[in-house]
Length: 196
Image (cartoon, one colour):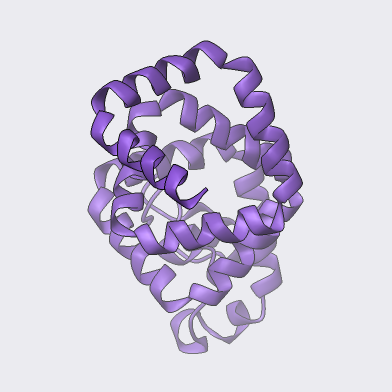
């Protein structure tokens, strides 16, 4: 009994070798019978019965199935990753639409997940941002210009608040900048006076 598919044996009376978790490949993957010739015409008409059995089995064995999936993914990382990449490449629009819908329906959940990830991976996130900015200077600059043009009041309010909260920090930065760029600052002031 342990080496046979339980759903096939109980529902259809068919002795099919078990593939994983006491189910054959079709039952485990959730797919119906592939053809009438494979299991016979009588069994082919019981798709709904088999599907109902599969749903009930999954509902009653959530942890068992989840553990099996985790173990499979851990043992087949490259195979799973390759399958996901291939699926994404073949279904870009479908995946993008799903992601937009999920984010729209789970704004708080997504935001909380992002905050937690950034807090746990500060260095990794900072390194990615630096690399992205270095590789996309024009794109980043254009995005910043567009944002500032569309949010002038918001940007100005943020700058005022930042200056008020970081007076010493900004003053120290200015002193250090002047000390390291005396010639540049002097030339700028001279040009300003001549153009004044």
